[in-house]
Length: 123
Image (cartoon, rainbow, N blue to C red; front, top):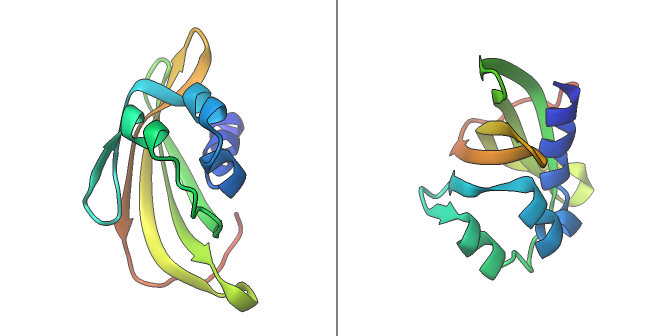
């Protein structure tokens, strides 16, 4: 599952969130996201409106996974934006569903839910 955590963390990188070709590789054709705001995004919407303001770093920790079926993994974790002075804000509990395809692992579904603040722990 280290590979899936690595791929999830790659999506936290601002340079990846601005890279259409890399996002096209990482996101499943049927990708759906329910954001912290409750807004729903699909792959086309993500790729057509790349987050040009995605400059914040993301801290993530407490990764857990559950094998749903062969080639389908549910990954859950906590995350936050890293701000000035290395402070954390915009805390979330996240769930991602990763599917193994012929091209490799693809993110099929993601949901971020606002949560209370937490102490920074191990990644």
